[in-house]
Length: 594
Image 1 (tube, rainbow, N blue to C red):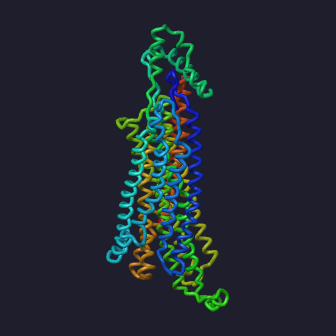
Image 2 (cartoon, rainbow, N blue to C red):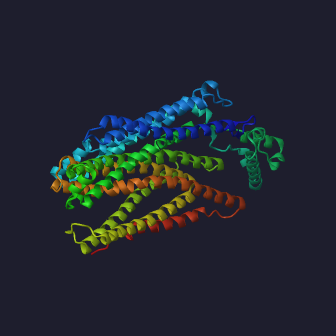
Image 3 (cartoon, rainbow, N blue to C red):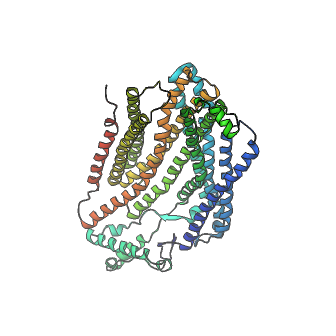
C-alpha cells in the first residue's frame, strides 16, 4: 500500500506483483532443492556406509536435514538477489529498498533454520543416545514405574523451555531484521481517523455521512490503482454542511496514522521458511512409521519359527539368515524412527503458531477497518480471552486422551474375555474386532471434540472480536508449549523402552516392565494429543477469521437498520452447545463401573 497525494491508501500493484512472483519462485526452487538433497545424501551415505553392517541410523537422516537446509538457504539468497534487488517503492529511499532482498532472504532463513535446529534440539530429549532418555532408564531401574513417569515429564518440560526459547529467538531475529527497512515499506492504517466535529452532529446526519463515505471508499477500492490514486471519498451530505464544519471534518478524516507491519510480514515469512523444508520433514517423519511397522510385522510374523525357513532362504536368495541380528537392526531402526517422529511434530506445530500470527493480524486489520479495534492489556475482554484460550487447550488434551483411555479399556476388556493369550498365532477375526473397537471410540471422541471446538470458536467470535483475538493468541501460545511437552515426553518414554530392549537387552525384566508403562502413557501424549494440536490451532484461526467477519457484518447490519444486535445471543447459544459436547467428551466417554 502507498499514500496518494490526497492522503488515501491505495495498492502498489507493481510491488505486489514482484513480491508474488518472488514468493512463488522461492517456494518452487526450495522444494526442488529439497529433492536434490535426497540424491546428495544418498551419494554420501553409499560412500560412507557401503560394506558396514552397523552404524548410527540417525546420522543419515540428520545429514539429510542439514543438506536440505544449506541448499534452501543458499537458494533463498540467490533468488532474492536476482528477483527483488531492484524493488522501487514510491516514497521510500532507494538505500532502503536496495537492502530488502537480503533482509527478506534472512527472514526466510530464520524459518529454515528453525526446521533444522528443532530436530537437533529434539534429539537432545528423545534420542536413545540422549542423557534424558538414559536418565529415565536409570530412574526406572531403582524407582520403578513412578520414576519412569516423572523422568519423562521432566524431559518434556525441559524440551518445551528450550524449544520455546529457540523459536522465540528466531522470531526475534526476524523482527530485528524487519526493523532495518521493511517497516518503512509495509505500513497499514490500523485505526480509522476520528472527527470530533462529525461526532457532534445529530445521529441521523452523522450516520448518513458515514454510510456515504464508506460507499465512496468501496467504489474507489474497485478502481484501477492509477485512477484510485486521484480520487478521495466524498459525501453529498457532508458537502451540504456549512463551510467551517465541513472543512474541519474533512481535515480530521484526512489524517492518516500509518503503522509499520514489517514484523508481522516477517513472522509470516518465518512460517514460510518452516514449510519450505516440508518435503524433508515429511520424509524423516515417515521413516518412523515405516520402521515401526517393519519391526512389528517381523515380530508378529514369527518367520524364524517356520520349519525349514533358513534352508529355503539360503536356497532361494543365496545367504544364511541371522534372525537375531535382523531383529536387532529392525529395533535399532525403530528407535531412530521414534526420534525423528518426535522431531517433525514440533516443526509442524511451529508452523501453525508462527503462521497463526499472520491470520490473527488479518482479524486485527478487519477490526481496525471497521473501527472496532480495542486491544489493550487493561481491557477486561483481552485478559479473559487469554484465560479462555488456555482453558480450551487443556480441555482438548483431556478429551483426546479420554477417548484413547476408553477405547484401550474396551479393547483390553474384549481381549481378556474372548481371546486365548497362550496361542502362538493371532486370530484374524479377533484382531478385526479389536481394531473395530478402537476405531469406534476414536470416532466418538472425534465428533465430540470437533463439534465442541467449532461451537466454541463461533461463540467467542460472536461475543466480542477483541476478546476473540486474545483467545486465538492464547490458543497458539498454550498449544505450542503443550504440544512440544507432550511430543517429547512421549518420545523420551518410547526410546527409554527401546534402550532397554536393544542396547541393554533386558527385555522381560522389571526394568523393561517399568519402561513399557512409560511407553504406554507416552503413546497418547506423542501420537494423539500433540499431533492434533497442530490442526486445532490452524482450524481455530482460519475458521475464526470467517466467524469474526460474519459477526462484524451482523453488528453493522443491526446498527445501520436500527435493529437489535443479536450476536451476543448467538454466541450464548453456541457456547451452550459447546459446553454440552465438552461435557460429553468425558462423561459420555467414561469407562463404565464394573
